[in-house]
Image (cartoon, rainbow, N blue to C red; front, side):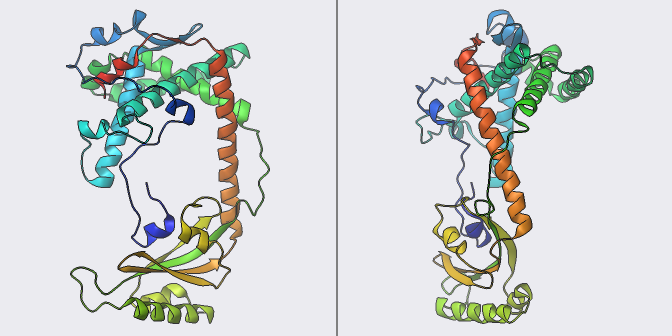
Length: 347
């Protein structure tokens, strides 16, 4: 994950192949056993993994084993797609068994995440049933149409692997639609007081200079020379010239970017940048041979700050609904008919 906009802009960001870790409560659970995937089963074998092909149930609501396994397969394929496009390499079985900071493997954490998400769907449905929240005919038929289209596009190999049947996927899509309706009704109007200072977002220009000593490149400036050139660029920007155009005169390509308070608190360069007033500048080494320059265009951009405030409001709504979901799940008697080892054929 990119650690900092500033470092990314200057080419000094570190990346790590990783997926989001589970929440703190999940991290306290005992790591589950993950076995080597068995040979591809038939649909009937997949359905037989749990009683009557049901993986999870709550009252009259249920999620089939096929839908559960296919949901996990979708997430696995998504992560592999991201890995392939970002790293230009395919994820291997060894990557999925890589131990994370919580002591679990990537495979275990992804399985847990999907498991919890499916239980979230049922918990929300339980709340809906208890409070008279139902899908309209249009909403239900829309979810059904979406499910049929998605099912038709699923490769036969994936259907066979998971045992997914069309009626099961229709039921799952309708359950997900109900989840979204409950979420909107319960948390859509939730508002948290957020000040402009809390959402303050600065706008800045950033550019980088490769320094003498960069492998395979001759004629590059020393750090002292590069800092002197940057000061010249900053001075001309202070005098009213377009900093982007001035930087290009010196052969430097940069970009305009933004940074919000509280987003990169662990990045000392980001924290330092947020102290700049409009027209102020700073330089820093992103690595041994790269000097970065930051020029503050606006210490508190009104439009960007408003956008950040709305983003923070949405995050607050998500947190509020997450708390309700956890409460509903704790109170609900969700029947889990499928063991997590059943997911090992996918991971």
